[in-house]
Image (cartoon, rainbow, N blue to C red; front, side):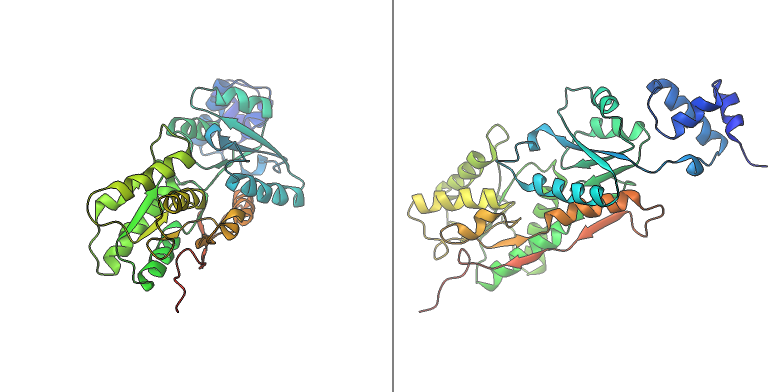
Length: 328
């Protein structure tokens, strides 16, 4: 006969009701008691799947650096996808923004979620805290080993951007990147470097310019472009920026300096935000389905036995005038 809920209660020195609440992630227990029950159940080999309730509440956790949707609309679109998927399944979503100095456990206790979707960058300590809470968890635009995650094909997108620039006979291609602590940015930087190797070209590390962490992203991208233009030696003939906002900032610096886009420097971004198609010249970019990113995250979270726990969504190239010189 297998281990019963009564066996777990006896071993953990709690009531059967407490075991049930702990394994269902229901409120009313201290974190210490919940953790003790979960660890006891795991040690005894108790299958808690039969106690798992239907997920009714989901908290969408976002780092405070991402919560200005007006300036950085990427995650607002991801959230729309999450909300749509939740609405179709009768799940109530809530949004929580948190920084590294805040008590995430206390905030989560107020939200009382049955499951959590973490989007974008969070500190490793925050992620470890969420894992310890023993709630169903999915990562969106973020990756960690052994965890369910949904990401864009960031490496493949960078390859598309670089292949497009190579096809335009550009070889001195710079990369303006953000913090490599962000999984998606690190993957785009990897795709950028790998593209040179696959094209049989030498990679010049001086052309990879990170954004100053002390500046806001727009000012940081502008400064990075200015550094590329002011550096000794030949200028880059193209720029691949880690997102469209950085690409547009770089383009403004070029045009202000009298550097023609794309005749002197071709520029391409990533994300296909609305402003990309309305810039002068219109910005080439890698198009992504941001709503699908959020929707697929909820779907993966709810799957009992997913075929794959690390999902990668496709991207596509949108070629516009910022990279293609008109032929006479």
